[in-house]
Amino acid sequence: MISSVLKRITKKKLTSEPTKDPSERIDNGLPFNLKIGSVITIDSVPFILNDGLTIQNPGATQLVKAYGSLKILGFPAHRFYLEDETGKEESVLEIIETDDELEIVLYRDFEIITPESADDWDHWLSEEDGYIGYPVFRLRGADENDLYDNYWGSDSHQSEPVCATETIFEDMFGENQCTIQHTMMLYSKEVGDIHEFALLSAEEDTEKETSLVRVSLGIPTTLQ
Image: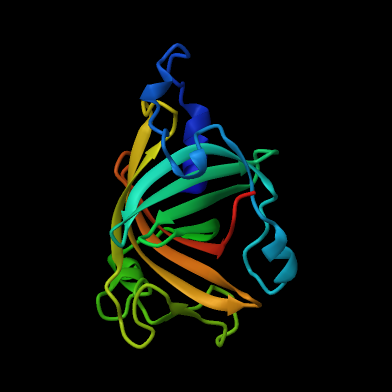
């Protein structure tokens, strides 16, 4: 989703007029006053202090290229699709508004899989033992004991995946947008003094009529 969204932004002709009323922006009132076009600074310290992380440092300065709105576990969630100063590195800053705090995680794609058959999809979505909802998860190519535990569900038995509908706004007035249906589960392991997350999501792009499985890695972060 990260790369496909940003590619779509560059290909589409924006129809928003510069004379539009700023109060009509769809990105008003978001956490930290972030907006499409904002430049933000990501904390690089966790990458420096925890060299066992699999996720790669995307660089400190990031530009918000698109904004996604959804609910995760009943809480409002905001996804800011980012690229760095070169335009080559892409990541997602996710902010979930829980009852007690803002949970901020920086995600980057690790792997994208396109299942070709019903059996392939069953590996991910089977109610009995699909990867999305399984008690543990291991990255492709990782040591067999290098496991992420189920963070949203149970680490002892199969859990029901979390479903969410995300609307991604590709311009500040919402004239270019798309909808992604997610079936997902979050996993976690300790690396040094922080958690590294693995987010598994079966995604359906209702506009493009495409489906895939995305494996993203993330760490808690702060904005500077």
